[in-house]
Image 1 (cartoon, chains in turn red, cyan):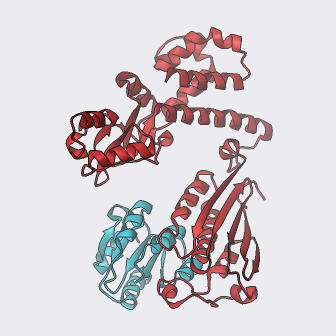
Image 2: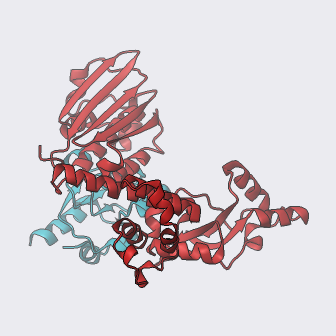
Image 3: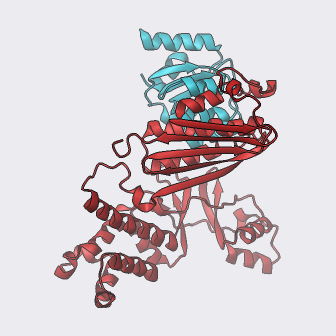
Length: 356
Length: 111
């Protein structure tokens, strides 16, 4: 932990143009930051040093849920230890939360597994072998609490649960905290520089532009696969919203992506959708590998559809997909060749972005 | 007018999103053609349909609908429910046909 936070602080300090000599001299100071004694101590040198205060501020301002890992592997109490072994092996993890009806009921790890192995109890269930008394973090706790808990217990990770209903929402590791802090420090640094240069605080993208000047998101779409349709759209929606795009722009982009995805699913052998966004526009491209559209003009006409009946019964194929995409787009290009495939490219301008 | 009021007046059964019923309903849209709904409904609408497969959640989420009412005794698939819970889209059901459901909501909104 200490190494990680030190690295974060060092990096911050370096970004602020501090020399490494001075860094060495501030060792004492940084160690204090780590134990969170600073706000309560009188120390002129420290309170005057805004660079450090920013880190403290972040550690209190950032919540556990802001930096935790949400893509987590869980098992249920009914799983056998044998199954657990496979899960741990395949995912290369040392332990996992045990979840029943979305609620955390225990944790189980490699040490439990080893015990079962040596005693020949691999058919036992996770529910019998798990640790029931689990130390957790709440998603809305400040990161500072988490740091203390890591120090107190010496664990490598904590399950994170939602305070209200006790649902498991993620896992927090030490490296999550370091990464989260580093990222915010970097953003804070860049934002300041950006403000300095632009002297304009009304940019929607203040925080994000810094994080990345553009973002790219790409996913594959399989033909005829209605089951996962829209799955990526939820993610896209979330990312665009995190990037700070205004809701109407997000709606247009995600609707276009969804219609394009449905077109690939309904009519093609499969394809891929890529979305890139930067400061003032979102570009969406959909490519598939055929069969291609014979008459584009006809396909663009509202109400024209070649969808089979069963697809229409699902509520698709009303002949509005392409017209809907066009409605969402500022510019739209469509190319198609029978036997080769279709390529659609649309651009949505972020009019609310930087005063265009 | 919020969802809770409509649920009470029409005696709808709530299948998920009970905690989201405070949402304000700004208008409504009825349709079973997803692209039609995508193209023509608005943010804050209550959507009345009898499609029950999981893609309705995607549509409601894309359009920021207040919720979905399934009519004619149509019940959401388990996949639909799972997604709706995740995406925080309330789903309500009614035994009544679409015409009557829409008529009642329209009356509530415009009188």
